Length: 314
Image (cartoon, rainbow, N blue to C red; front, side, top):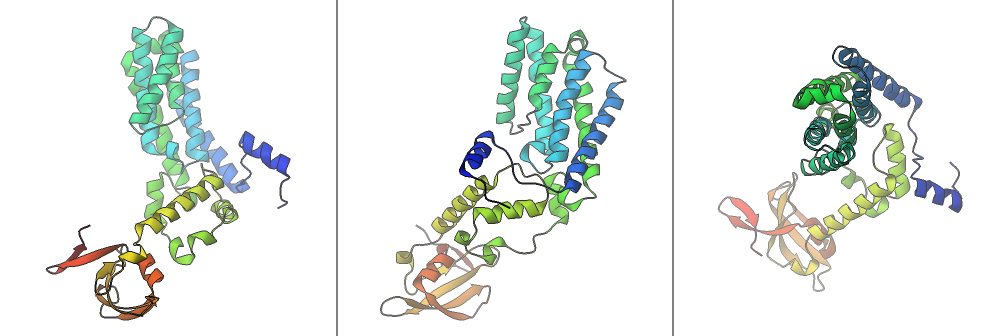
């Protein structure tokens, strides 16, 4: 891949153009999934709705289809944002349509309230704004439904598109939806923290990893690199400082592979420590390391409480 010129890089960053590509197989699966979902929605809606209101509502579900089939692992694509986002937006839209005579004010307020409610309920789903709008400007047919609009057609449409997304994506391990379902079948082979130090991972490595996933990731490689740096900083802050490591005291690293080490000896300049493992992994073992290495390993000092170890009081 040729390195972009500074002008091209500036244009790409300002316009937000995603240069990370997925395979043609992934693109065609997204297209076919969207077709299947919306075709099922249309079959059901033809029995209940017609006219402009139906067009607006199906348009909002069409936006959901883009998320569920093109970005199935994105946060706004997950079941709670999908269900909660559409329902709370429909509630805001119907309420504004019933009690605010001015349609312009009602439409604007419905979308604003929908956004606020989705924030507080932690179910942000961008197509929900279109659902709120449809409830206000969808015409008499939708207005006549009143709050029944939340059940039919909104909830019915949401359930249909959700079921299609689960069933359609299931045969493809990298696309299994929702994200929690994928975790039941796909297990991490190795822990990235054991492979290398945080500073050895560069932005180009993250971009390459995204490309290997062969699925649209709704966060940029730059954002991921920033998150990794912040996580690495937090990990460093979580460990003890070298001046907190004292002869004779007990320390633990916590986590699944926890152990408790006691400092039993140290060199005159404190460059080398000798410790023994008194509990947990490699119990009864001993070891030698530098003070810095021990400080990076230790998360907190511990004391014995009967048969248990607990963090020492600050």
